[in-house]
Length: 505
Image (cartoon, rainbow, N blue to C red):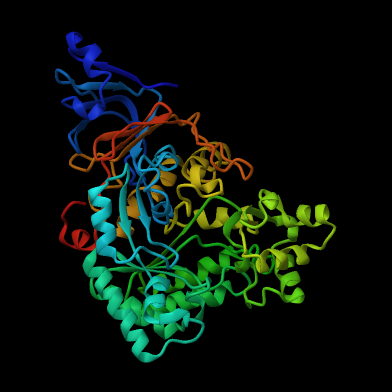
């Protein structure tokens, strides 16, 4: 279904309707089902945007001369989706229009996640402001980023010394002053995994001093998930920092079905007064490096590797998506590769590690756990995707929730799913004028067809764009319209100090 655009002045129809929407005096969206992001029921209304803000919401709005009028009958108008965990910082320079992101309704993204960020933050902010992109951006400072700088010469495979921890904390403070909104960690990954809990507490305290939050890819998402959750709770309590668990999951057979236990742990912490939340992406498969499968780091030990593959349900559940030294392995699982090569899956794993590693997708979660997580109002929706990622979540996360889990499976009401994508992540970040459709709010808006919206990406075709998202506005300017990006790049960089001061939100 295509959006119908018209103009009030017949003399200007040919001119106004072919230029970008922002060039008109205003935009009037008519007869839409407005879902405002708060969880309130949908209501039919007209919405008027002038420049960067929503100026009027009413049952009927009389358009002004030269306004662009959008007939959105049968469509939903919602706030733009705010992605709390996004890896597009790796691809925005090559694709500033961010087609894979705006096509699924993302208007704001948090980057610098999983413990890895740009450095220095001041340079990143300056670069992105000098070369804007289609979406709004916020960045965290990465724990592994500052750890690598403080522990010179690659000597990070140990606990940090007190002076090194002090140096890391100083770097976090610098990053916060330069614009970071908080600290991220990837405690399961190589650099961060050698850190101690007190080290992370010290860095989280440095972020908290300047109003930041702590966002963590926890130390284990497999058999020791519950220990890792307890560590986040400890960090939040000892550092006095708001905490957020990225892509909460139960990734091995030993913890499948235990979502109620994980929720109970976190709910108890929340009830004790801790400000702690989480997000979950709508897929039963993760994407990472192949070595993350083996938590004891014995990557060439056949016994350790065999156990790791068994823990995720077998080698058929590990799909190679990128392997520089073995391109013929890509988009085959370890079992398929082993059978083709006449070897064991353990042998193939070790061969890949020895030749430089690979990116893999591990089908290692249960949909019943995802459903239980989504039933919790404080567990939000995020993609863990990004430009160029070889996982369907990179292009399909938000439409998949709206299509499969809302329209088809009825896991969530549409209004609640949108709240988890909009006002709830906005509140987590401190964004006061985004994530809602209300008069005076910034005009980050998505118009979609609730009967058609769906993901189309698969593990074989992870780059296939979603369908059903008709129009996306960022700060009042169209960045996606009728199946393609526009040339506009209205996205802003939003810094931590701006969140605190209330400017440019």
